[in-house]
Amino acid sequence: MKQQSQAYLYGISAVLMWSTVATAFKLALRYLTPLQLMAIASLSSSVILTIILLLQGKLHLTKRYLRQHFRFYLLLGLINPFCYYLILFKAYELLPAQQAQPLNYTWAITLSLLAVPLLGHKLHRFDFAAMLLGYLGVVVIATQGNLLQLHFTSLPGVALALLSTLFWAGYWILNQRRKDDPIAGLLCSFILSLPITCIAMFVNEGFPTLHWQGLLGGIYVGCFEMGVTFACWVLALKKTEKTARISNLIFISPFLSLYLIAKFLGETIHPSTYFGLVLIIVGLLLQQYGNYWQIHRQHTSID
View 1 (cartoon, rainbow, N blue to C red):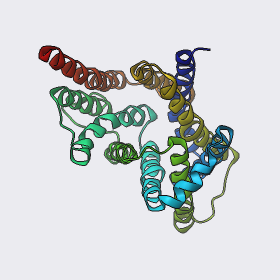
View 2 (view 1 turned 90 degrees about the horizontal axis):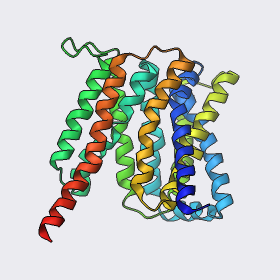
View 3 (view 1 turned 90 degrees about the vertical axis):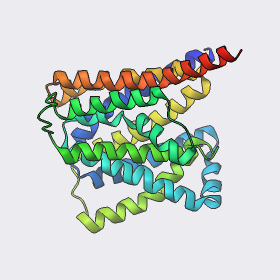
View 4 (view 1 turned 135 degrees about the horizontal axis):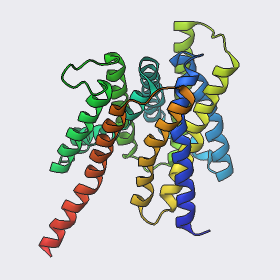
């Protein structure tokens, strides 16, 4: 199989798996608290990532990173998975899945905002247009289209969903400063954050009473939100001849996710959810390709 075909196979597999996790979050949270879900998912993900690195012959990298960059990966672990997923799961607990899932897709817009003070990037006109469309989509989804009344289903839930994008974007910006193997680096973050998650759970909630449905849901989230899916996505980007061919696949995920939410959670998808999601996606596409077109036009005019 050609490299590009393999890239598509890995990319589509990742998108299909990511499309299921919003439904999995809500189902698991019927039986688990956000801390319990995070503990089970983090442990499951650590096991899966260890197996993947063993198969790749790269497990030794984890030991090296933990020895050489302990404080850096401890910081990353506190950001992701600890803060990011704790906030995200709480948002899913407060909001319908059809609202929490699209709001989480604004992380790319948050990333461009954080890159200004942290990486010295400049915002272009397409970035501003993307922000306007993206956050307008957020308001449309969160108010179910009642823009004039601004009546939110759960204002704390919306705030937490948007706050989670800040932690996710911050995690990726910090990762850009290193060229470590991404899967080994992710395992380091999970290994260091897992004891913190367990201590927080026991202190706040005591030893959990687990139902098999919650345990299975936590394992599923750990495998297919944090583990196998991440590895597939990394391999897809590594094997592709052109990053855009793979990165564009991610825009399929939210629409497929809404179908699964309606099918398995029984949520009636509000028309405003589709409209708001389209605004967010258009904003992201405008940001991705508008800046590229602007830079290309500048180079062409110079030539």
